[in-house]
Image (cartoon, rainbow, N blue to C red; front, side):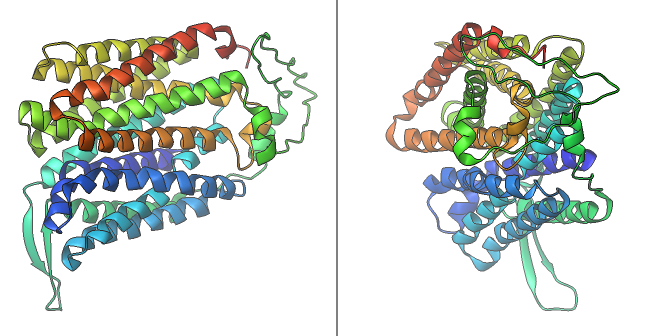
Length: 439
């Protein structure tokens, strides 16, 4: 489990470490700064493609796909680092695309769902989100620390020289970190027997899918001394629609909205703060690092609340409510540095902490069939969350090209406010169907 959380930390650090310096890197290679959004969006776009592949692979084991994803991230960061040496902007996009192909978020989620009981799942997923938040904080912090770097060093026993600066050094750092992680997995990751997951579900009878207009029903637990052995047949793609009940679809849409708003806030930060407040890379990276670190204790508190018996639906509703408050602060008439930071803090922290509760609720209400096989809940959560990121980057790029910078703030965050308000409405409307107490 520790290596699973480390993977989450490194991947999220890798995702966000290039944000502050990516625009300068593209310009230094002769590219147009308008492509910065595409560079950032290449990673989640590739992750959507690879998620299905990893989901299929994890049906037979975890160690091999983890090692393979690590190798892709190693190669991707090596390309990103080498772009300056070869003066090739295409290396940047290829490198970030390979990092996305190596993204194993769905694999991480499925590992938790397969190996953690439903009682402790929200708490464990809060650790998962905390590890991701720590990576999101450490990435910009390292970008700031490397920003002033400017070295030329000679490779021993050769006449070859390499330039290392604040633009390509994140690639080298992540190359080394993924290499160390890959070696750790190769030596210390222990594969659980493949019948482990079946035994987890053999202790309980299958849960009747929840439908709108019907009361959630769960079959009684079998007697402890005579466990009911059930054979779980994974869902095929043509059977997927029948398994997607109303509450499952609602949670997936909430996850999409969650990631859309979080990505929109983070990716728009350099544009908005530079235009409105004259911020530099150091200011942006420091803000991202500070707020990312604040998510860690909040996620831990959410996990503790869940462990103490507070329902997932209660936590989801109130965390979305706090996000609405933060967006209202964002959209106040007199936007200043302080209101921007406060709004950023509330929205980002509440939605990041909410991710673990959404994933936990989803894993609890799906039928055992949807928890196994290729088209499982972890894959669906990854695809919807990543689609939210991709959509946010596309929306931001279009807004940046077509909209006057003076009204960009309202264009970006008014739709986000509408989405959050709609989320609160549908959560309350479907309150009883989101119950996981009997699961």
